[in-house]
Image 1: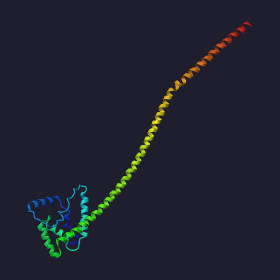
Image 2 (image 1 turned 90 degrees about the horizontal axis):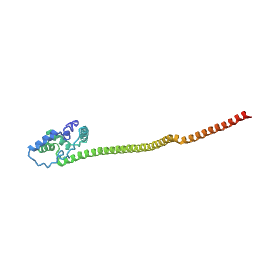
Image 3 (image 1 turned 90 degrees about the vertical axis):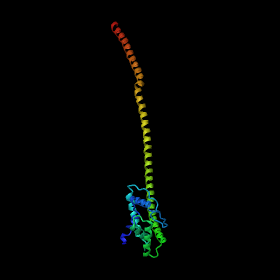
Length: 233
């Protein structure tokens, strides 16, 4: 198989649709159970977590990156990668007989090939994938931590600003309340000002009236005497 084509069949190891899973279940129900001591890399993988519609493109992109990584690090000779490609070239869901047939053919290509060597190379690719994923997860977690720190800093700044604003509002509210109290007190003083000065005005007016009356009486007496002098002397 050409270098550019490597991994094409291997891709089916990663991208296996629901229809294939249903067909596999139906095949397993119809075929007799055969004891298989050989480790199956596909069947021994952990169940996949459900992925949302928005995450599906991200999943496919990263699976493609992992596939390319495996292809780029393909070990020399006939190893797990070539064995898997051969499996899926024979059948979409390899049966125990297919495993045995492919292994016999592979041994003709590589006389030193053993199940142990296949499992050893499988472990190499698993470790390669695990290390790559761990690095990506570590970078992602660091980015999340940085974003969390940035978020917390921004939140704390906004909380402090909000506290200052509310303190100013409380201060201004108190000033407004004090001014309102002063306004009410001044208004009451304004209403009481007529009463405060009214009695004083009355006293002054009484005195002025008394003075005028006294003047008139005195002047009348003087005029009477003045007329008597003019008339009798």
